Amino acid sequence: MTKLSVNINKIATLRNARGHNRPDVLQVARDCERFGAQGITVHPRPDERHIRYQDVRDLKRIVTTELNVEGNPTPDFINLVREVRPEQVTLVPDAPDAITSNAGWDTIEHQIYLLGVVTELKALGCRVSIFLDPNPAMVKAAVGTGTDRIELYTEAYAQQFHADPAAAIAPYRTAAILAQELGIGLNAGHDLDMDNLAYLKQNLPGLAEVSIGHALICDALYFGLENTIQLYRRQLL
Ligand SMILES: CC(=O)[C@@H](O)[C@H](O)COP(=O)(O)O
Ligand SMILES: NCC(=O)COP(=O)(O)O
Image (tube, rainbow, N blue to C red; front, side):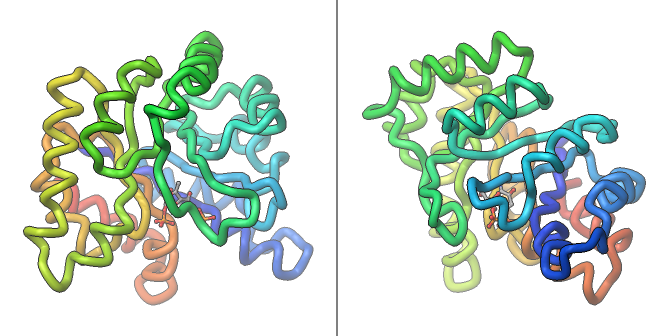
């Protein structure tokens, strides 16, 4: 089974536009779970432009599925994770000024650093996932970091999907099979949507979880949050 973790960053973007508490990020997280989300993902960025560190603390109290916290393991981020201890931490090498995540880790160059971070987070009881491009050398080197899972960065897949789905999925399928052979769990995310999700699921063996935010929240404007979560879940059957 592939789980759907709903990324609620964009709910916080909307809330922050007015400085009040509408929409209420915590209530939306509860409702996402009630509507079928099997996890809640957030990516607090250093400028707190959407999810704030306090949101992460509050979400940990109310999320009943799994809380997945994504981010670059800066000292502030690590301190937050030490305090909150989410079920899963996804390490993403994003620059503070990046508009959104735009690359996976170089697990060869940063292997020793990642090993230290992963070891600490696992000792806290968190499952750890490392955001990666579908590059076999990076998947192989991820083993040396001790990570539980990798999250394949799917922007390139999403971009190529409509023009040539077979070519778009090929490197991801190779990476997924390799991860399985190496005994690493597999997640995927970024720019997944209602069009490209089922094909991804069908072609990636062992896909444990997808985290989806931007497109899902956009679709919810038209279809409503409950219908949209159910529609996305159906793509994963
Ligand atoms: C790690 C990842 O892929 C991101 O997609 C992310 O969580 C989205 O972040 P933004 O909502 O800030 O674009
Ligand atoms: N890890 C990816 C994620 O949480 C959501 O990415 P997106 O759907 O907002 O592109």
